Image (cartoon, rainbow, N blue to C red; front, side):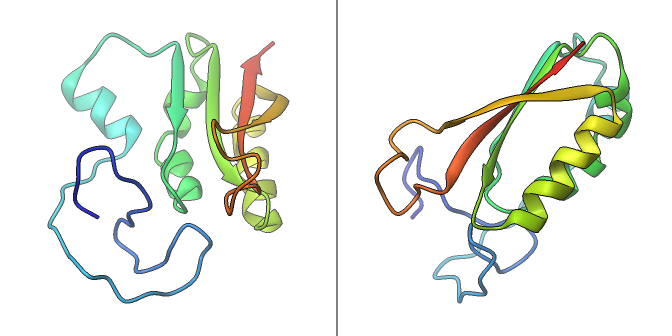
Length: 128
């Protein structure tokens, strides 16, 4: 759906939020850069908190932000993950913890606790 605020889009790969292949009804060109590239090139105020909600490419986002995640100025990161994909969840947790942040807790994303998205949680990580 192309309406403002819609969700469940994919980027680069034709897989849905559950990791299943699908046939897109619409395709839109986009430019994507890693977190580290964005910070290096555009020099924004350094983030102290990051939220990642990308519907299926969390590993790629984390991989592209390793320098940023290792920086002690980053206090916390929230990543929305799908518990029905335990290998992906475990991989993301491991990458983030390697960068010095510690998994604290998970909580259902708003309005996801009793729907088709009941396996989707916000995972919270904090620097000790």
